[in-house]
Every structure is written in structure tokens, then in C-alpha cells.
Amino acid sequence: MTAGVALAHDYATQRGGAERVALLMARAFPGSPMYTTLYDPDGTHPEFADVELRPGRLDRFSVLRRHHRLALPLLAPAVDAQRVEADVLLASSSGWAHGYRGARRTVVYCYAPARWLYQPHRYLGGADEQVRGLRDRAVAAALAAISPALRRWDARAAERADRYVTTSTEIQRTIRRVYGIEAEVVPPPAACRPDGPETPLAGVEPGYLLCVARLLPYKNVDVVVEAAGLLGQRLVVVGGGPDRARLEEIAARTAPGLVTFAGRVDDAEMRWAYRHAAALVAASYEDYGLTPLEAGAFGVPTAALRAGGFLDTVVDGRNGRLFAAPVPQDVAEGVADVLARTWSPDVIQEHCASFGEDRFVSRLQEIVAEELSAPAVAGGAR
Image (cartoon, rainbow, N blue to C red; front, side, top):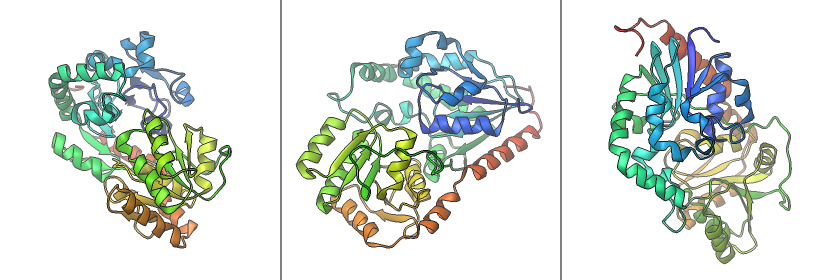
């Protein structure tokens, strides 16, 4: 292992951006063990097989590995039961890994303070009762019962950490508001890079608008669909989710024949989708503006909402344009502006390269080195 360093991640059960960052941490600190609550090899990135994962006691239950939200009432005691053996723990946390104890020093890379506590509507998908399934309604009921105790656990865990690092200025403000902690911003790199195989999307011709998002109401994909209809522009929507049927109905009514719902795609299809788009359109309120960086790696400009994490990653006039509000007319005007301009792919790619993997890894290594050399606190490991 990288001497004295251990890693932690909430649960390795999904194929999300946080899991990609956790794998980057494993590459930055080769050989270091990674503590986690649950591990589902079939549900997450295959590269986790190369990491020395140390899952907790809940991992013996296959139903929890497949449906980690069902484990929510059990995760805090599960984390408390696992002790870390390391001088420095680097925790990749959306709400659980920052609670691991035992290391002499703890650095938390926080994607956001626990959504199930501070943004439960977003955690449960933003859907109404008709869209949400029985499982999520059960989780919502459990949340209401255990939230006070979990908030106390969460606050104590945050207070124990020696250092907080986060993805964006938006989450930096949230961490300050929720915990009273000043976090350093170290943006993660784009996950989808141009250097790799590409597979065309069936039945799609180049030159379309592209929207990449989970199909949930708060992602404002309906607004993008309506804007495409106003412009008479073709739109490809990449992503899956429970809102698809509603969005297809909106598309049939407001943008007939213009919208292709590609669903979930693999990396090769995603590369092709980015490379052959005329522009990316992003109308949701995001903690971190990742998709403009992914599109920008292919030299593709973005029309994005002037809010949240897009303020960190989209520079108006350099790699895209920002529109004021998530309403069809504003989105349409922003997209029309992007399409009317001549963009330099080299300038766009140069901007996005400033959020690169080397810079991210180097800064994390510097932070961990500083904590390794920090004097021990009275009482040793916590």
C-alpha cells in the first residue's frame, strides 16, 4: 500500500461519478486498502476488482448490495463498527465514508453533505407519489423516523475530520452552511475522455443538440425538449430514469419527430454522442458542472443554466453560453446563441484541460502528504 494511507468510499454498488473519483484515488495511492460498506461487482465499475476493498458486515446480504437504499438505517452503525488502520484516511463521501474512525488523520473529499438529510427530495429522485415506487416510499418513511439521529451522527463525523475537500464552489458554500467548515475546492476531472473506442447511436445523424441527464423531474429535461421544439432542432437525450414516459409525451406534443431518447449508453456510445453533437444543453441545477467538461474535451460548446456548478466549469464566450432560467424560451435563446457563433475547438479543449486528471491527482497527493507529516493529536487515532 501507499505507506500509511487508506481510502474509504460510501458503497461500491453503482456506476456513478463518485465511483469514478474513488477509482482515481485508488490509482493516486496504489495498493492502499479501500473501506466501504457494500460491494456489488455486477453493479459498479469493473476496475474495483483491482482494488483491495474491505467491505463491512452488511455486505453479506445480497439484497443490500443490489439495493443500497434499503440499508440506509443500518449504514451509520456499520461504519462505526469498522475501524481503519492507517495514518491518513482519504474518504470519498456523499454521507457515510467520512464517518470511518481509527486513522490518525482524516481527509474528506465531500461530493455534498448527505442528501438524505439535507435534500431528501433530490435523494429520492424528485418524483411525486405516482412516480416513486414502493421501495422509495419505504425509504422516505424510514428517513423521517431516523433523520434526527443521523444528523447528530453526521455532524460528529464532520467535526472529527481534519480537512475537507470538495468538488465545486457550490458545494463549498453548502459545507460551510451545514457544517461551518471551510473546504478546499479540487474539481474532479471529466470521466468521459476522447481517447477510446466509439460506437454510433443507432438511427442518429450528426449535428444534433445533446442533453445528458438522469430522467428525473428536477433535471429539467422537459424544458430542453420544449426548447428544441421552439427551435426546430433535433435533440438526443442520453440517460435513463422514471420520468421517461412523461418526457416522451411532452416530446410528442411539443417537438414531434425531433427528439431521440437514447436511454443509458456505454462509454463508446457516449464518446460518439459527444463528438457528433452541435452543442450540449444543460438546464438542471447541478452541484458540479461535469457534462460541459466532458463535451468540451471533444471541442463541443455548451448552453447551460447560469447557476450552481456550471458557474465553475462554463466560461461565457469561451466554452459556451449561460442562460438565465430553466424555462423553454430562455433555453432556446441560449442554444440559438451557441449555434450562431463560431467556436474554437482548441480553445474549448484548453479550458477543459485545466480540470484534468493530473492536476486532480497531484493536489490530492499533496494534501495527503501534508497530513502524513502533521503532528499527532493527543490521544492518537480517533
